[in-house]
Image 1: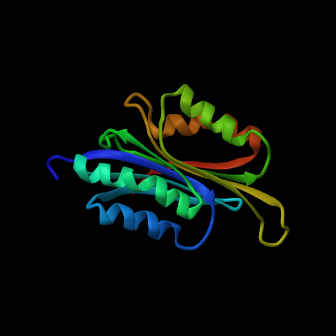
Image 2: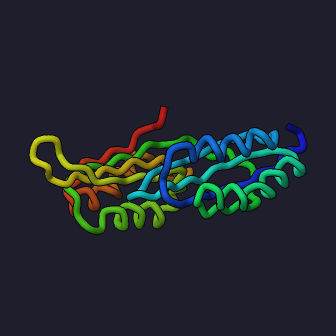
Length: 175
């Protein structure tokens, strides 16, 4: 679409079957293209953020439908203008795993912020270890490094966080 514009849509509310279909169908029926999305269930709440594109008329059609769709699904839905996705640099996958303890996300995100690392996606969760039931923390992030920072340098910088929080940590090219 040469006349394409972009919008971001966020939705949150009680989880139930059919939410993704209803939202994606609304976008498709308006003639728009769903470009990118992230969805999760956190507690009993459904959370979604997505990027879609279309002509100004198609985008207006989606916006006109969001309030009634949100009400019918029990979701809070917001739509806002946004830019086309920017070309970034090479993407790296950062992983961390260890016994759960307070402050891990803060420590990792602090290092990323201090070194101007752009976070594309960031996910963390706690699950019980298979045999012991010990709470285990897992983090996965997709990041873009500034040109002056290498993956090896980021691993080294994150080493103090890994040592302090007893984490196994890796930074590898995302293939």
